[in-house]
Amino acid sequence: MNWNDVIRYANNGSPAPDRRVEKTEEEWKAQLTDNQYYITREKGTERAFTGAYCEAHDPGKYSCVCCENLLFDSDLKFESGSGWPSFTEPAKENSIKYEKDSSHGMVRVEVMCNVCDAHLGHIFPDGPPPTGLRFCINSASIQLVEE
Image (cartoon, rainbow, N blue to C red; front, top):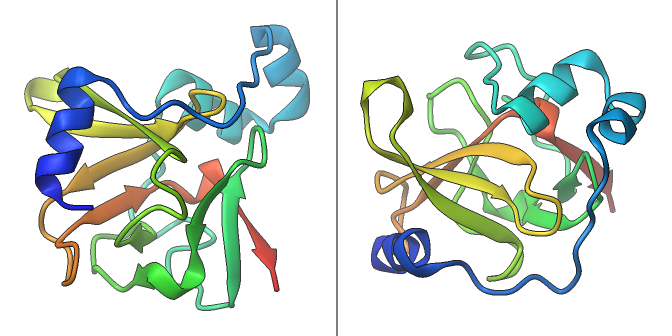
């Protein structure tokens, strides 16, 4: 996966997910903390360097806090210095949904859980090799499943 793939998905649609999870806003509110709801369902952002997984190095897999869809492997996590957990690629090509985001006076690519549409963060083309990608993820949108 590389930046050209990301742009193609953002412009033409992401790969189909293995399954879908859809709930009412009331069901999401009952399941999530206020902060998790704000970030995942209202497209919020946690302050830099405040997330639980910003500097975590525990082995395991990261899944969506809303639907438990496998998103990232801890082996692909790196220190970006950005203040958010950063990964070089998703666990599976169809784990992530990509959409153009023109909010806040800039153009970015938003990344969401492809199973439940939870907002995860954004992706940038300034990561390390081999992908050159930086998935910049809110800690409140993911959970670590330790090995």
